[in-house]
Image 1: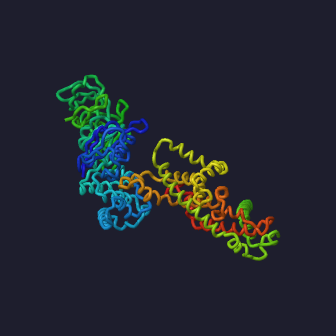
Image 2: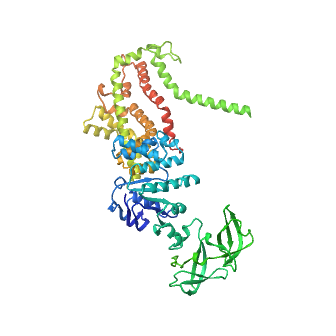
Image 3: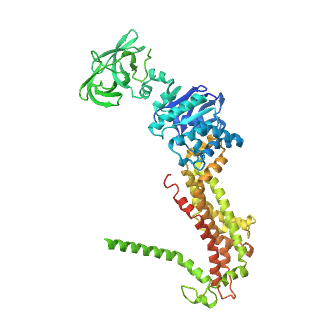
Length: 361
Length: 277
């Protein structure tokens, strides 16, 4: 068991920099998720930790030991690949045993450990099958089995669930969470799916264009996104962004002019905000409510999506922007009617023109 | 409509028949001739009057043909062995490792196979003699490698590139050093490509004439194609067609047997990688 630290890690391919000076500390036993849009460098960062790519600069430490120059086999890691990468010519048993054989473990020990892993992952009946005779979920479990049988210091997962169908993905997600609870080994998990990130992580690292946008606990990223990118990326429904104008500061709040003419005092630390400055107000769909009295936002409802337990209403604002509100089922106005919404000030985020967020209480 | 279709199928069948005849008639003729001897050889006819196995016995008793076949087998097996060993190692480097000049090296290897054999003959002769391998089987093995390596390397490299990169990486993460990865992961997956490639290398070495003719002198180091060309009859004026054909049939049989044995592998090898799955 060991923590992982990255010190000013840089990586470029053919002159193109894909990882820019990343500093990161992952504590021993932590479940850390790298998340970001495709091409943000999250898989590359994982491969740098694995040793499958060599860094162009900086250092990688595992368990306090500098492994920057060490090959993968000397790092004490195990990895689960997106494509599973099971050896197609070996049975499930041979696939799981391979990592032990390369370390010249004794035959009896190998057999015992393979059996134990097979039991834990419910693969007992499949040990003599070839990968091509397995379903997607079973292959995934074999790939995980191949990783845990070696008892590594750090587990690396590279988008392990992206090839599975939706229901199986949820099921495997729970299995991976359970696995982490029982093993308590450091895990680094790469995904582009923010739901996986939110549900699995102790710590989420949001990456964009080779940089860390923000790293922290899921609730912290959800409640206190540091900038527009993180605010828009985290959350199962994308945050609404409204162009607003600062009207002035007032005891620990910034008063802003909303599209359509409404005014709202947003309780943020508004140091540096000047009257007349163009800002962006962020509000999550699940925090918008139907207005009881005078609405903060109003406009014609263009589309209502019925999801059974909830409805998503899309309102066209006077300035042409579209806002999404998650409403309780049966309460949304009909399509074509005018919707009136209320913004709970405490749930609002405020961003400067450069994208950085004002601090929230 | 129906008649047109029938005519089309008939024409297709005829075409097939023509191709088969064209491909197989020479061998059939050799087979028939090998069972004839004496003046019967010069009577044209599609069927032998009688099956006379005398030529087959004569080839072995009169010409020390057994030794010649053994030489050919030794050379071909060694060439196939070395070709495969070197080609797999080279394919790993060329197909898997990124290094400067890889493309140029690949083209050079392909270029080597474009030289006509005669062009390298004299240079190769000097090389063989300098190494003290003239008139020896190892010398012939070395020379034949020049013929087989370019295409074995090229085919296996192409195939190696098709193997998913994650497999190799998974093995590295699993703690396997590069040689183990080649032996335990790549080799088993390359089998379908290696079998037909090895077979082609065997055929090339088995049929090779020019090097064998130039680099050997004595009957003890002669290979089959040379021995057949040098078969002599009872007198200077007589070319022993019966013996030549009997010897030809004998040396064709191992190839036919090999191809039939590995037929399924060859087909799967030639198409492998075309479609995933």
